Length: 199
Image (tube, rainbow, N blue to C red; front, side):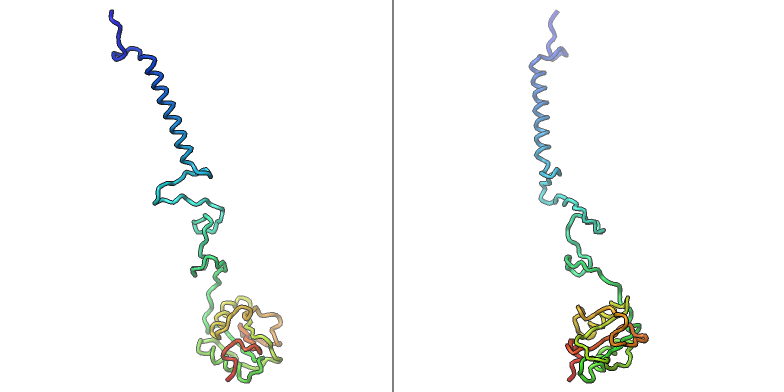
């Protein structure tokens, strides 16, 4: 009886088994090498496609905008991501804001001039008068909760609000009887308000 060859379903030669095993081992080693090469130093897959950027690691900057990867955001929508001051509440209408202007500058008629600048904006204006003493600084005081309106008044008077707009102390400066006033403008000798400089 003739011996069957391996092509007829018999047992394959030993060298074919060795060659197949060797190919499998090489394929495994090659796959492991490719996997190791494909991971970056920080453990993430390296993206090599020029059109796709690797995701930025999340640094825990949970600012609620869905972009929690540490990149600066623009909290105020003013184009300056470094400006982290929070936008305040909207101002009340001018006709709800009662302003009292008192002159401590020593310039005659300064309080009336300031009142005349504010009147076209629609503010409710008490009759201006003199402060009991000379005031060195011009200050715009506001009742608690009326800061946005005080800032609006500063803009109307063309004055920088930093250091000028302040919370009303108790009692009010110069023993002022505020009545219904929510904003008190005290004109000082520094004459920072252009309309209070006199002619």
